[in-house]
Image 1 (cartoon, rainbow, N blue to C red):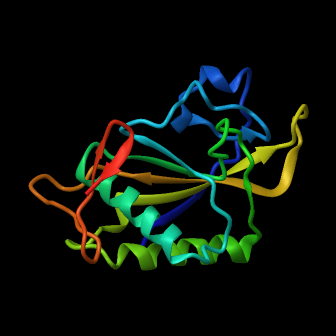
Image 2 (cartoon, one colour):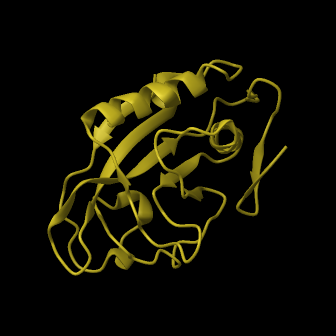
Length: 169
């Protein structure tokens, strides 16, 4: 199972001076274009619950690609257009369900993905032009470690790797 963590610290100063992986909060509407998608970073403009099988397939492909290359972070709740922070509204039940859904996706991998290889973090979103948090809104950060040496990870039928900020079969 993936592990859960809530980032709840205050981010001081401009978010652009921090590594995307170290951010403890995001501000609604912030443009993350200074952190483009890369070998280790992917943005997803998804809603929750994940209703589409295509969304689940794309999420599995990205996790698989990160396992097979350098590891990386998936940030869910960032607009694909302009890389603007939107966040997802998630109550505590939604957070628990999202973790269970990710755990279910991980069970479809071969070889087995160990719990410490994938971590789910709920990073709070602040209101635009304010230090107040937007109640119930989070950017979901899925942290994927590089897989075990000499292992090649597959989803049910495909193997992915990361190249030039994209997933390849």
